[in-house]
Every structure is written in C-alpha cells, then in structure tokens.
Image: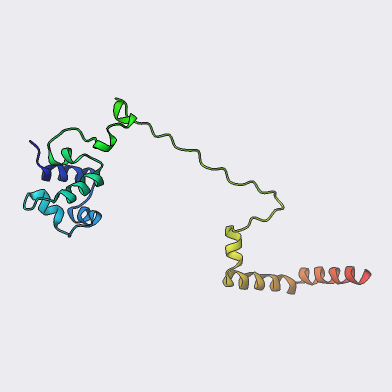
Length: 150
C-alpha cells in the first residue's frame, strides 16, 4: 500500500516543486512537507484536505486508500465519465483595431517616445540644425514670401 508521504512526494515531483516551495504554497511551516513525506509527522485532517485540494485529488488518493485521483466533488462531472482526455481549444486572438493611414494611433510606442524629454530635446536639436542649413533657410524664406502674399 502506498503511504501518504509517498503520494505527497509523487504529486510534488509531478509539479516540479521543492519541499519548501510546497510548504510555502500551502501556507505551512517551511519544513512541514519534509516531515509529512518522511513520516515524521502526520498532517491533520484539515491539512490533508488542503493538500488534496491543492493537487486536485481526493483525500482517499492522497492517503493511499484509492488509486482513483477523482475528488468526490468531481464525481458527477461529465468529464469524469469519459475515457478520452479533454481537448483544449484555444480562443482565437482578438484582431487589432484597424486605423486609417491618416488617423493617429493613440497610446502607441510613438506617443510614449514623444513624451520622453530626451526624445523631445533630440528632435528639437534636429529641427534647429535643419532650419540653420542653407536648404532650411530657403524653405523659411519661401514660407515667409507665401505668407506676405496673403
């Protein structure tokens, strides 16, 4: 017959947990899982129920009294009556909203970058450099002439 400690160790290893990690997950003292698994201490009824619930097995399975992992609450579940494993069908990912080419995207990476002081200083410096160049001076002169004609 399988002991409670052996079942606990088996279930813990299936989850890839260390003994201290299991104890912490259950809210028990750090070395409780070790004591239970080695048989130095027997968990209380409440602790057994908590361990069984954590692993999703019956208390009878945890104690080694049954080879059926099914919890009593799950006995009437339709999935418990089928021989097949349940199939996971993922939901399709939501489609991103469509934006027109002229419509600004709000809350995007560009907005975050433009809100940055460093990026603002960099852009300001680039614009000033362009405006100080001969090409930039020609663009400014042309814009001034156009405004004066109005």
